[in-house]
Length: 378
Ligand SMILES: C[S@@+](CC[C@H](N)C(=O)[O-])C[C@H]1O[C@@H](n2cnc3c(N)ncnc32)[C@H](O)[C@@H]1O
Image (cartoon, rainbow, N blue to C red; front, side, top):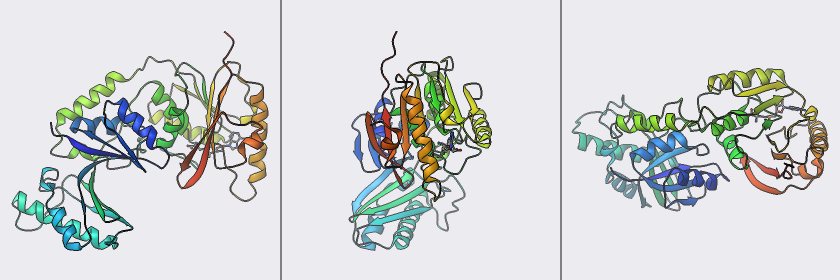
């Protein structure tokens, strides 16, 4: 089976978590760069990584890399690549682009040249004299130029991997599913421990925790571009889906809860969980976070509370943080993980975090405050 260079793209700050996931799937020689993780894999890897990677944005296939400072260079070197091995005669191949610190800075021109060059190659190799119909499978091409180095990729995912297919509704500030999965993976929660999100919004964190808890492949209920591609066999796709079915541990009992002060968000969470096939696995409740008084020991709270960035919200949010901190003082065995952009969080919550990690929620710089609980008495 042919081996490819694959690129799992990642949000800033999540690269090492994506790399860990790639390695856990059995792929070695993983290179971690800004916003991407590079590794080698065959067509099975394309299918498995799309199905299983919880924290990556997309899986791209590297078609070629070269230096170019003129449009002629770009055209000829693009044309020299084996596009016909990936794109069938009727394949659609829209080209997007970006250029940073490069001689070829006009992105529309670069896109047009790459498009023309690939079209010529395909016509030549597939023996098409006239126009390419482009009414077949979608192959999104990206031309990315950084300091005159051109990277040409095909997007094997299609729609971004955060779109698991379960989110029917959302609130004002939903977390991306990929970031929610990362927040869970950054804890040392084990599926047999209680898990709570006290500010659950549309339920993304509890839903991702349940998928992790039962080892359900996050991409199981959606489609990917590569599934339509000629060079990926049906057998590969079936084998990957069978593996996902085998690996799922539907017998794992879970104790996962999502709460929010807004009953509309609880309804949305319920609908999303049902769509994800998890309706019986997560308990939802409309509740004020500061009314939380757990009876168990050693549970986990993973939450993305409001940040209080809107004018007038600041004081109210600080009040919630303060009271939340006071409540948790009475539950020293609990592990608390909070993602917020409020830089005063530790001060207001009243305790210094055991660990802090910088993450980005979209373009908002946030910190992930991690409080490890005391070991419960046996
Ligand atoms: C940033 S959003 C959470 C988004 C969520 N992670 C998602 O993916 O949809 C914060 C949520 O906290 C809720 N909230 C605000 N104050 C609260 C309080 N005192 N107790 C519980 N929930 C509260 C809001 O209704 C909102 O849904």
